Image (cartoon, rainbow, N blue to C red; front, top):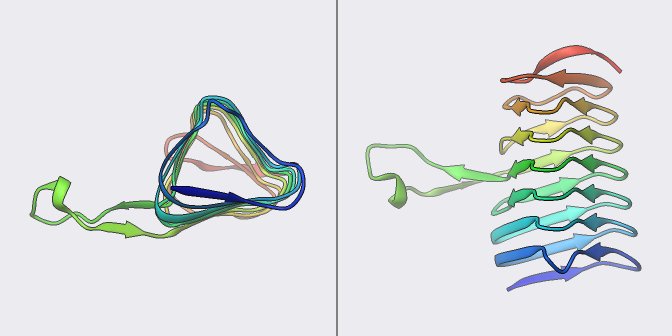
Length: 154
């Protein structure tokens, strides 16, 4: 079972699918919009004040994930806080690697973005639509592409 806790007003749309077990901590006015799937295995997701998860997203949070104040996550985005170890045994038997995904404050993540586990996105950054983020992003920058690369300062 996934526990949702938090002070004051926040909103998780009724169509959001919560799978597994863990904790979601919702800040004031944080939102998870329609048709998002949040899958957890003893993970923790923290949405700070005024953070918004847009429509049709997939959040795999078997590690820890923090989404900062005023951050906007566009539609059809994938956020990952875990992965699987890769050795010579069948993939379905591999151990889960739990990590942290940290998304700072005042960030705009465009539509159709995938962000890998273990990444830190610095404050005031923009992640362009259709990007794959596999390296941490400095604050006050704009990145985009597959894989995401520096475009310019913000």
